[in-house]
Image (cartoon, rainbow, N blue to C red; front, side, top):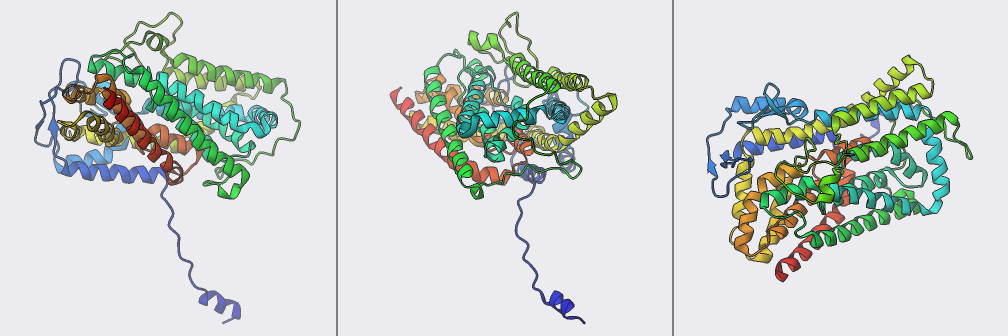
Length: 520
Protein backbone atom coordinates (compact mmCIF):
# COMPACT_ATOMS: atom_id res chain seq x y z
CA UNK A 1 0.00 0.00 0.00
CA UNK A 2 1.42 3.41 -0.97
CA UNK A 3 1.96 6.23 1.50
CA UNK A 4 -0.70 8.28 -0.27
CA UNK A 5 -3.24 5.50 0.10
CA UNK A 6 -2.37 5.07 3.76
CA UNK A 7 -2.85 8.75 4.38
CA UNK A 8 -6.19 8.60 2.63
CA UNK A 9 -7.45 5.71 4.73
CA UNK A 10 -6.29 7.21 8.02
CA UNK A 11 -7.75 10.66 7.37
CA UNK A 12 -10.55 11.29 9.88
CA UNK A 13 -14.05 11.68 8.55
CA UNK A 14 -15.40 15.18 8.48
CA UNK A 15 -18.51 15.71 10.53
CA UNK A 16 -21.45 16.61 8.38
CA UNK A 17 -22.82 19.97 9.52
CA UNK A 18 -26.57 20.51 9.81
CA UNK A 19 -28.14 22.10 6.79
CA UNK A 20 -31.56 23.72 7.12
CA UNK A 21 -33.99 22.08 4.68
CA UNK A 22 -35.11 23.85 1.53
CA UNK A 23 -38.37 25.79 1.38
CA UNK A 24 -40.16 22.86 -0.26
CA UNK A 25 -39.01 20.43 2.43
CA UNK A 26 -39.86 22.93 5.16
CA UNK A 27 -43.42 23.27 3.85
CA UNK A 28 -43.75 19.50 3.56
CA UNK A 29 -42.75 19.18 7.23
CA UNK A 30 -45.22 21.91 8.21
CA UNK A 31 -47.97 20.14 6.25
CA UNK A 32 -47.28 16.86 8.03
CA UNK A 33 -47.17 18.59 11.45
CA UNK A 34 -50.53 20.32 10.86
CA UNK A 35 -52.04 17.05 9.62
CA UNK A 36 -50.91 15.25 12.80
CA UNK A 37 -52.24 18.09 14.98
CA UNK A 38 -55.60 17.90 13.20
CA UNK A 39 -55.90 14.25 14.29
CA UNK A 40 -55.92 15.30 17.95
CA UNK A 41 -57.98 18.49 17.60
CA UNK A 42 -61.68 17.65 17.91
CA UNK A 43 -63.84 18.54 14.94
CA UNK A 44 -66.35 21.29 15.58
CA UNK A 45 -68.78 23.53 13.80
CA UNK A 46 -70.36 26.95 14.23
CA UNK A 47 -73.74 27.79 12.83
CA UNK A 48 -73.43 30.46 10.15
CA UNK A 49 -75.65 33.37 9.21
CA UNK A 50 -76.90 34.25 5.73
CA UNK A 51 -73.56 35.78 4.68
CA UNK A 52 -71.51 32.85 5.96
CA UNK A 53 -70.24 34.40 9.22
CA UNK A 54 -70.14 32.22 12.36
CA UNK A 55 -72.80 32.91 14.97
CA UNK A 56 -71.33 33.59 18.47
CA UNK A 57 -72.20 30.93 21.04
CA UNK A 58 -73.36 28.39 18.44
CA UNK A 59 -70.26 26.17 18.45
CA UNK A 60 -70.68 22.46 18.99
CA UNK A 61 -68.35 19.52 18.66
CA UNK A 62 -69.19 17.05 15.91
CA UNK A 63 -67.99 13.66 14.81
CA UNK A 64 -64.97 13.82 12.55
CA UNK A 65 -66.16 13.95 8.92
CA UNK A 66 -63.21 11.81 7.82
CA UNK A 67 -62.06 8.31 8.61
CA UNK A 68 -58.34 7.74 9.20
CA UNK A 69 -57.93 6.50 5.66
CA UNK A 70 -59.64 9.61 4.33
CA UNK A 71 -57.35 11.76 6.49
CA UNK A 72 -54.35 10.06 4.90
CA UNK A 73 -55.87 10.78 1.52
CA UNK A 74 -56.22 14.45 2.47
CA UNK A 75 -52.54 14.58 3.41
CA UNK A 76 -51.49 13.05 0.09
CA UNK A 77 -53.80 15.29 -1.95
CA UNK A 78 -53.12 18.52 -0.04
CA UNK A 79 -50.62 19.85 -2.63
CA UNK A 80 -53.08 19.15 -5.45
CA UNK A 81 -55.94 20.77 -3.54
CA UNK A 82 -53.59 23.62 -2.69
CA UNK A 83 -53.11 24.16 -6.40
CA UNK A 84 -56.60 23.86 -7.86
CA UNK A 85 -58.94 22.62 -5.14
CA UNK A 86 -62.50 23.96 -5.35
CA UNK A 87 -64.56 24.71 -2.24
CA UNK A 88 -68.12 23.44 -2.18
CA UNK A 89 -70.51 26.28 -1.39
CA UNK A 90 -72.74 24.21 0.92
CA UNK A 91 -70.32 22.00 2.87
CA UNK A 92 -67.13 24.06 2.60
CA UNK A 93 -65.18 20.91 1.67
CA UNK A 94 -62.26 21.45 -0.71
CA UNK A 95 -61.70 18.98 -3.53
CA UNK A 96 -60.72 19.04 -7.18
CA UNK A 97 -64.04 17.47 -8.24
CA UNK A 98 -66.34 20.04 -6.60
CA UNK A 99 -68.49 22.73 -8.10
CA UNK A 100 -67.98 26.03 -6.31
CA UNK A 101 -65.28 28.69 -5.89
CA UNK A 102 -61.57 28.24 -6.39
CA UNK A 103 -59.74 27.64 -3.10
CA UNK A 104 -56.35 26.66 -4.52
CA UNK A 105 -53.57 28.99 -5.58
CA UNK A 106 -53.53 28.20 -9.31
CA UNK A 107 -54.00 31.90 -10.08
CA UNK A 108 -50.84 32.90 -8.20
CA UNK A 109 -48.89 30.03 -9.76
CA UNK A 110 -49.87 31.01 -13.28
CA UNK A 111 -49.04 34.64 -12.52
CA UNK A 112 -45.48 33.97 -11.34
CA UNK A 113 -44.82 31.59 -14.24
CA UNK A 114 -45.94 34.29 -16.69
CA UNK A 115 -43.75 36.73 -14.79
CA UNK A 116 -40.81 34.36 -15.17
CA UNK A 117 -41.45 34.19 -18.91
CA UNK A 118 -41.44 37.97 -19.23
CA UNK A 119 -38.29 38.38 -17.14
CA UNK A 120 -36.51 35.71 -19.19
CA UNK A 121 -37.27 37.42 -22.50
CA UNK A 122 -36.55 40.96 -21.28
CA UNK A 123 -33.32 40.00 -19.49
CA UNK A 124 -32.01 38.34 -22.64
CA UNK A 125 -31.82 41.80 -24.24
CA UNK A 126 -29.61 43.01 -21.33
CA UNK A 127 -31.62 46.24 -21.23
CA UNK A 128 -32.33 45.84 -17.52
CA UNK A 129 -28.70 45.03 -16.71
CA UNK A 130 -27.48 48.15 -18.50
CA UNK A 131 -30.20 50.27 -16.85
CA UNK A 132 -29.36 48.82 -13.41
CA UNK A 133 -25.65 49.53 -13.87
CA UNK A 134 -26.41 53.09 -14.94
CA UNK A 135 -28.78 53.67 -12.00
CA UNK A 136 -26.26 52.20 -9.55
CA UNK A 137 -23.62 54.64 -10.83
CA UNK A 138 -25.99 57.57 -10.38
CA UNK A 139 -27.25 56.55 -6.95
CA UNK A 140 -23.80 55.69 -5.61
CA UNK A 141 -23.58 56.06 -1.84
CA UNK A 142 -27.21 57.19 -1.62
CA UNK A 143 -28.54 53.67 -2.12
CA UNK A 144 -30.18 53.79 1.28
CA UNK A 145 -32.64 56.35 -0.10
CA UNK A 146 -33.72 53.85 -2.75
CA UNK A 147 -34.20 51.10 -0.15
CA UNK A 148 -36.23 53.40 2.10
CA UNK A 149 -38.29 54.76 -0.79
CA UNK A 150 -39.20 51.29 -2.06
CA UNK A 151 -40.19 50.12 1.42
CA UNK A 152 -42.36 53.16 2.12
CA UNK A 153 -44.06 52.85 -1.29
CA UNK A 154 -44.80 49.14 -0.83
CA UNK A 155 -45.96 49.76 2.73
CA UNK A 156 -48.33 52.48 1.57
CA UNK A 157 -49.74 50.21 -1.13
CA UNK A 158 -50.07 47.36 1.37
CA UNK A 159 -51.84 49.57 3.88
CA UNK A 160 -54.37 50.92 1.40
CA UNK A 161 -55.08 47.99 -0.91
CA UNK A 162 -53.31 44.90 0.44
CA UNK A 163 -50.50 45.02 -2.12
CA UNK A 164 -48.47 41.88 -1.41
CA UNK A 165 -48.59 39.03 -3.95
CA UNK A 166 -48.07 41.61 -6.70
CA UNK A 167 -44.56 42.21 -5.31
CA UNK A 168 -43.36 38.95 -6.90
CA UNK A 169 -42.67 40.86 -10.09
CA UNK A 170 -40.17 43.18 -8.45
CA UNK A 171 -37.61 40.61 -7.26
CA UNK A 172 -35.88 40.14 -10.63
CA UNK A 173 -35.71 43.92 -11.01
CA UNK A 174 -34.52 44.89 -7.53
CA UNK A 175 -32.07 42.09 -6.74
CA UNK A 176 -29.58 43.05 -9.50
CA UNK A 177 -29.94 46.71 -8.55
CA UNK A 178 -29.31 46.14 -4.85
CA UNK A 179 -26.34 43.86 -5.61
CA UNK A 180 -24.89 46.60 -7.83
CA UNK A 181 -25.31 49.05 -4.96
CA UNK A 182 -23.27 46.82 -2.65
CA UNK A 183 -26.13 45.18 -0.77
CA UNK A 184 -27.02 41.50 -0.62
CA UNK A 185 -30.11 39.52 -1.61
CA UNK A 186 -31.46 39.69 1.94
CA UNK A 187 -31.74 43.46 1.63
CA UNK A 188 -33.75 43.07 -1.59
CA UNK A 189 -36.01 40.37 -0.14
CA UNK A 190 -36.51 42.22 3.15
CA UNK A 191 -37.26 45.54 1.45
CA UNK A 192 -40.02 43.87 -0.56
CA UNK A 193 -41.44 41.46 2.03
CA UNK A 194 -41.24 43.74 5.06
CA UNK A 195 -42.31 46.78 3.09
CA UNK A 196 -45.50 45.24 1.74
CA UNK A 197 -46.38 43.10 4.77
CA UNK A 198 -45.73 45.84 7.32
CA UNK A 199 -48.16 47.97 5.34
CA UNK A 200 -50.70 45.15 5.26
CA UNK A 201 -50.28 44.61 9.00
CA UNK A 202 -50.87 48.32 9.63
CA UNK A 203 -53.76 48.51 7.18
CA UNK A 204 -55.61 51.81 7.17
CA UNK A 205 -58.34 51.51 4.51
CA UNK A 206 -57.40 48.17 2.94
CA UNK A 207 -60.81 46.91 1.74
CA UNK A 208 -59.76 43.25 1.94
CA UNK A 209 -58.82 43.31 5.62
CA UNK A 210 -60.10 46.42 7.41
CA UNK A 211 -63.02 46.65 4.98
CA UNK A 212 -64.16 43.07 5.53
CA UNK A 213 -63.57 43.25 9.30
CA UNK A 214 -65.52 46.52 9.54
CA UNK A 215 -68.38 45.04 7.56
CA UNK A 216 -68.53 41.99 9.82
CA UNK A 217 -68.36 44.18 12.95
CA UNK A 218 -70.99 46.60 11.66
CA UNK A 219 -68.88 49.76 11.84
CA UNK A 220 -67.51 52.24 9.31
CA UNK A 221 -64.12 51.58 7.74
CA UNK A 222 -63.12 55.07 8.89
CA UNK A 223 -63.66 54.26 12.59
CA UNK A 224 -60.27 53.96 14.29
CA UNK A 225 -58.34 55.25 11.28
CA UNK A 226 -56.33 57.76 13.35
CA UNK A 227 -54.90 54.98 15.51
CA UNK A 228 -54.21 52.84 12.43
CA UNK A 229 -52.36 55.71 10.73
CA UNK A 230 -50.23 56.16 13.85
CA UNK A 231 -49.43 52.44 13.87
CA UNK A 232 -48.60 52.54 10.14
CA UNK A 233 -46.15 55.41 10.62
CA UNK A 234 -44.47 53.82 13.65
CA UNK A 235 -44.24 50.27 12.27
CA UNK A 236 -43.13 51.37 8.81
CA UNK A 237 -40.42 53.58 10.32
CA UNK A 238 -39.24 50.64 12.45
CA UNK A 239 -39.11 48.30 9.45
CA UNK A 240 -37.23 50.80 7.29
CA UNK A 241 -34.71 51.56 10.05
CA UNK A 242 -34.22 47.84 10.71
CA UNK A 243 -33.47 47.00 7.06
CA UNK A 244 -31.27 50.07 6.57
CA UNK A 245 -29.21 49.15 9.62
CA UNK A 246 -28.52 45.70 8.20
CA UNK A 247 -27.94 47.11 4.71
CA UNK A 248 -25.34 49.60 5.97
CA UNK A 249 -23.56 46.86 7.90
CA UNK A 250 -23.24 44.44 4.96
CA UNK A 251 -22.17 47.21 2.60
CA UNK A 252 -19.46 48.24 5.05
CA UNK A 253 -18.41 44.66 5.83
CA UNK A 254 -19.61 42.04 3.28
CA UNK A 255 -18.52 39.21 5.60
CA UNK A 256 -21.48 40.04 7.89
CA UNK A 257 -24.01 39.15 5.19
CA UNK A 258 -26.38 36.33 6.13
CA UNK A 259 -26.77 35.11 2.55
CA UNK A 260 -23.73 36.30 0.56
CA UNK A 261 -23.74 38.45 -2.53
CA UNK A 262 -23.68 36.03 -5.45
CA UNK A 263 -26.94 35.29 -7.23
CA UNK A 264 -27.21 31.47 -7.39
CA UNK A 265 -27.53 30.27 -10.97
CA UNK A 266 -29.07 27.09 -12.29
CA UNK A 267 -26.77 24.48 -13.84
CA UNK A 268 -27.88 25.26 -17.38
CA UNK A 269 -27.85 29.04 -16.98
CA UNK A 270 -25.26 30.87 -19.03
CA UNK A 271 -22.91 33.17 -17.13
CA UNK A 272 -23.48 36.70 -18.43
CA UNK A 273 -20.48 38.99 -18.81
CA UNK A 274 -20.54 42.09 -16.60
CA UNK A 275 -21.73 45.36 -18.07
CA UNK A 276 -18.77 47.51 -19.05
CA UNK A 277 -18.57 50.92 -17.33
CA UNK A 278 -20.16 53.67 -19.37
CA UNK A 279 -22.32 51.29 -21.44
CA UNK A 280 -25.44 52.99 -22.72
CA UNK A 281 -28.77 51.62 -23.82
CA UNK A 282 -29.15 51.17 -27.55
CA UNK A 283 -32.40 51.92 -29.34
CA UNK A 284 -33.83 48.41 -28.95
CA UNK A 285 -32.93 48.27 -25.26
CA UNK A 286 -34.64 51.60 -24.66
CA UNK A 287 -37.81 50.22 -26.20
CA UNK A 288 -37.58 47.08 -24.05
CA UNK A 289 -37.08 49.19 -20.94
CA UNK A 290 -40.10 51.32 -21.85
CA UNK A 291 -42.23 48.18 -22.28
CA UNK A 292 -41.02 46.89 -18.90
CA UNK A 293 -41.85 50.13 -17.09
CA UNK A 294 -45.25 50.35 -18.77
CA UNK A 295 -46.07 46.72 -17.92
CA UNK A 296 -45.34 47.10 -14.22
CA UNK A 297 -47.10 50.46 -14.03
CA UNK A 298 -50.19 48.96 -15.67
CA UNK A 299 -50.09 46.02 -13.26
CA UNK A 300 -50.13 48.32 -10.23
CA UNK A 301 -52.80 50.62 -11.65
CA UNK A 302 -55.06 47.78 -12.75
CA UNK A 303 -55.29 46.01 -9.38
CA UNK A 304 -55.90 49.04 -7.13
CA UNK A 305 -59.58 49.26 -6.05
CA UNK A 306 -59.65 53.03 -6.35
CA UNK A 307 -63.33 53.54 -5.56
CA UNK A 308 -63.21 51.38 -2.43
CA UNK A 309 -60.13 53.18 -1.09
CA UNK A 310 -61.41 56.70 -1.68
CA UNK A 311 -65.01 55.78 -0.88
CA UNK A 312 -63.92 54.13 2.40
CA UNK A 313 -66.74 51.60 2.41
CA UNK A 314 -66.94 48.26 4.16
CA UNK A 315 -68.83 45.08 3.61
CA UNK A 316 -68.61 41.33 4.12
CA UNK A 317 -68.93 40.75 0.37
CA UNK A 318 -65.46 42.19 -0.27
CA UNK A 319 -63.28 39.30 -1.29
CA UNK A 320 -59.49 39.12 -1.38
CA UNK A 321 -59.37 35.89 -3.38
CA UNK A 322 -61.24 37.23 -6.40
CA UNK A 323 -60.25 40.84 -5.62
CA UNK A 324 -63.78 42.21 -5.61
CA UNK A 325 -65.18 45.02 -3.47
CA UNK A 326 -68.71 46.11 -2.67
CA UNK A 327 -68.22 49.62 -4.01
CA UNK A 328 -69.30 50.57 -7.52
CA UNK A 329 -66.01 50.98 -9.43
CA UNK A 330 -64.98 54.23 -11.04
CA UNK A 331 -65.20 54.34 -14.83
CA UNK A 332 -61.42 54.13 -15.22
CA UNK A 333 -60.91 51.11 -12.96
CA UNK A 334 -59.81 47.92 -14.71
CA UNK A 335 -60.42 45.50 -11.84
CA UNK A 336 -57.77 43.06 -13.03
CA UNK A 337 -56.51 40.12 -11.01
CA UNK A 338 -54.46 37.00 -11.66
CA UNK A 339 -56.03 35.88 -14.98
CA UNK A 340 -55.55 39.31 -16.55
CA UNK A 341 -52.12 39.86 -14.96
CA UNK A 342 -50.95 36.48 -16.26
CA UNK A 343 -51.82 37.40 -19.83
CA UNK A 344 -50.39 40.91 -19.38
CA UNK A 345 -46.93 39.47 -18.76
CA UNK A 346 -47.24 36.80 -21.46
CA UNK A 347 -48.21 39.38 -24.06
CA UNK A 348 -45.51 41.76 -22.82
CA UNK A 349 -42.94 38.97 -23.20
CA UNK A 350 -44.02 38.38 -26.80
CA UNK A 351 -43.95 42.11 -27.49
CA UNK A 352 -40.39 42.40 -26.13
CA UNK A 353 -39.32 39.49 -28.33
CA UNK A 354 -40.85 41.08 -31.41
CA UNK A 355 -39.31 44.49 -30.69
CA UNK A 356 -35.91 42.84 -30.15
CA UNK A 357 -36.35 40.86 -33.42
CA UNK A 358 -35.62 37.56 -31.71
CA UNK A 359 -37.56 35.24 -33.97
CA UNK A 360 -40.35 32.84 -33.09
CA UNK A 361 -38.14 29.96 -31.97
CA UNK A 362 -36.06 32.01 -29.54
CA UNK A 363 -39.12 33.77 -28.08
CA UNK A 364 -40.83 30.44 -27.37
CA UNK A 365 -37.63 28.99 -25.90
CA UNK A 366 -37.09 31.94 -23.57
CA UNK A 367 -40.74 31.94 -22.45
CA UNK A 368 -40.53 28.23 -21.63
CA UNK A 369 -37.23 28.64 -19.79
CA UNK A 370 -38.52 31.57 -17.76
CA UNK A 371 -41.72 29.78 -16.77
CA UNK A 372 -39.67 26.72 -15.76
CA UNK A 373 -37.49 28.88 -13.50
CA UNK A 374 -40.58 29.60 -11.38
CA UNK A 375 -41.53 25.95 -10.78
CA UNK A 376 -39.73 25.93 -7.41
CA UNK A 377 -41.56 28.99 -6.03
CA UNK A 378 -44.82 27.62 -7.48
CA UNK A 379 -44.44 24.36 -5.54
CA UNK A 380 -43.75 26.31 -2.36
CA UNK A 381 -46.92 28.37 -2.85
CA UNK A 382 -49.22 25.40 -3.49
CA UNK A 383 -47.79 23.54 -0.47
CA UNK A 384 -48.50 26.57 1.71
CA UNK A 385 -52.10 26.65 0.51
CA UNK A 386 -52.44 22.92 1.10
CA UNK A 387 -52.05 23.45 4.86
CA UNK A 388 -55.26 25.51 4.92
CA UNK A 389 -57.01 22.78 2.94
CA UNK A 390 -56.19 20.19 5.61
CA UNK A 391 -57.59 22.33 8.42
CA UNK A 392 -60.70 23.14 6.39
CA UNK A 393 -61.52 19.59 5.36
CA UNK A 394 -60.96 18.12 8.84
CA UNK A 395 -63.34 20.73 10.29
CA UNK A 396 -60.86 21.77 12.97
CA UNK A 397 -60.71 25.50 12.14
CA UNK A 398 -63.95 26.18 14.02
CA UNK A 399 -62.53 24.38 17.07
CA UNK A 400 -59.51 26.67 17.01
CA UNK A 401 -61.85 29.66 16.63
CA UNK A 402 -63.88 28.52 19.64
CA UNK A 403 -60.74 28.21 21.76
CA UNK A 404 -59.84 31.76 20.75
CA UNK A 405 -63.33 32.98 21.63
CA UNK A 406 -63.15 31.44 25.10
CA UNK A 407 -59.60 32.77 25.70
CA UNK A 408 -60.63 36.42 25.42
CA UNK A 409 -64.04 36.17 27.07
CA UNK A 410 -64.63 38.04 30.34
CA UNK A 411 -61.34 39.99 30.50
CA UNK A 412 -60.70 43.71 31.18
CA UNK A 413 -60.36 46.20 28.34
CA UNK A 414 -56.55 46.33 28.21
CA UNK A 415 -56.15 42.56 28.65
CA UNK A 416 -58.89 41.88 26.10
CA UNK A 417 -57.16 44.06 23.49
CA UNK A 418 -53.80 42.38 24.08
CA UNK A 419 -55.34 38.91 23.94
CA UNK A 420 -57.17 39.69 20.68
CA UNK A 421 -53.79 40.48 19.14
CA UNK A 422 -52.06 37.43 20.58
CA UNK A 423 -54.74 34.80 19.87
CA UNK A 424 -55.02 35.90 16.25
CA UNK A 425 -51.31 35.29 15.67
CA UNK A 426 -51.55 31.47 15.51
CA UNK A 427 -54.88 31.67 13.71
CA UNK A 428 -53.25 33.67 10.90
CA UNK A 429 -50.83 30.76 10.44
CA UNK A 430 -53.81 28.60 9.48
CA UNK A 431 -55.73 31.32 7.60
CA UNK A 432 -53.22 33.59 5.78
CA UNK A 433 -56.04 35.31 3.88
CA UNK A 434 -56.90 38.52 5.71
CA UNK A 435 -60.44 38.59 4.33
CA UNK A 436 -61.03 34.93 5.23
CA UNK A 437 -59.59 35.46 8.71
CA UNK A 438 -61.74 38.56 9.26
CA UNK A 439 -64.89 36.79 8.07
CA UNK A 440 -64.39 34.01 10.62
CA UNK A 441 -63.00 35.92 13.59
CA UNK A 442 -64.73 39.29 13.70
CA UNK A 443 -68.34 38.05 14.22
CA UNK A 444 -67.04 36.32 17.37
CA UNK A 445 -64.70 39.04 18.65
CA UNK A 446 -66.80 42.16 18.03
CA UNK A 447 -69.64 41.26 20.47
CA UNK A 448 -67.10 40.20 23.11
CA UNK A 449 -65.46 43.61 22.79
CA UNK A 450 -68.76 45.22 23.72
CA UNK A 451 -68.81 43.34 27.04
CA UNK A 452 -65.15 44.20 27.70
CA UNK A 453 -65.76 47.90 27.09
CA UNK A 454 -63.56 47.95 23.97
CA UNK A 455 -64.77 49.71 20.86
CA UNK A 456 -65.30 47.55 17.82
CA UNK A 457 -62.89 49.73 15.83
CA UNK A 458 -60.15 48.94 18.36
CA UNK A 459 -61.01 45.22 18.20
CA UNK A 460 -60.55 45.39 14.42
CA UNK A 461 -57.16 47.08 14.79
CA UNK A 462 -56.00 44.54 17.38
CA UNK A 463 -57.16 41.66 15.17
CA UNK A 464 -55.30 43.12 12.18
CA UNK A 465 -52.09 43.55 14.18
CA UNK A 466 -52.12 39.90 15.27
CA UNK A 467 -52.87 38.71 11.75
CA UNK A 468 -50.15 40.89 10.25
CA UNK A 469 -47.49 39.94 12.78
CA UNK A 470 -47.80 36.26 11.92
CA UNK A 471 -47.78 36.93 8.18
CA UNK A 472 -44.32 38.48 8.47
CA UNK A 473 -42.90 35.00 9.08
CA UNK A 474 -45.62 32.40 8.44
CA UNK A 475 -44.46 29.55 6.17
CA UNK A 476 -48.08 29.27 5.06
CA UNK A 477 -47.96 32.83 3.67
CA UNK A 478 -47.20 32.66 -0.05
CA UNK A 479 -45.86 36.23 -0.01
CA UNK A 480 -43.07 35.18 2.38
CA UNK A 481 -42.16 31.70 1.18
CA UNK A 482 -42.78 32.45 -2.48
CA UNK A 483 -40.83 35.70 -2.36
CA UNK A 484 -37.89 34.10 -0.54
CA UNK A 485 -37.88 31.27 -3.07
CA UNK A 486 -37.73 33.73 -5.97
CA UNK A 487 -34.99 35.70 -4.21
CA UNK A 488 -33.17 32.44 -3.34
CA UNK A 489 -32.94 33.41 0.31
CA UNK A 490 -33.19 30.56 2.81
CA UNK A 491 -36.19 30.61 5.12
CA UNK A 492 -33.94 29.93 8.10
CA UNK A 493 -31.71 32.88 7.17
CA UNK A 494 -34.77 35.10 6.90
CA UNK A 495 -36.02 34.00 10.35
CA UNK A 496 -32.59 34.71 11.83
CA UNK A 497 -32.69 38.14 10.21
CA UNK A 498 -36.24 39.21 11.08
CA UNK A 499 -36.90 37.88 14.60
CA UNK A 500 -35.64 41.02 16.45
CA UNK A 501 -38.01 43.18 14.40
CA UNK A 502 -40.88 40.77 15.07
CA UNK A 503 -40.34 40.97 18.84
CA UNK A 504 -40.03 44.76 18.72
CA UNK A 505 -43.21 45.02 16.66
CA UNK A 506 -45.14 42.89 19.13
CA UNK A 507 -44.00 44.99 22.11
CA UNK A 508 -44.79 48.29 20.38
CA UNK A 509 -48.18 47.08 19.18
CA UNK A 510 -49.22 45.83 22.63
CA UNK A 511 -48.12 49.09 24.28
CA UNK A 512 -49.95 51.32 21.79
CA UNK A 513 -53.11 49.18 21.85
CA UNK A 514 -53.01 49.04 25.66
CA UNK A 515 -52.81 52.82 25.86
CA UNK A 516 -55.69 53.13 23.37
CA UNK A 517 -57.81 50.65 25.36
CA UNK A 518 -57.07 52.43 28.64
CA UNK A 519 -58.00 55.78 27.13
CA UNK A 520 -61.36 54.35 26.06
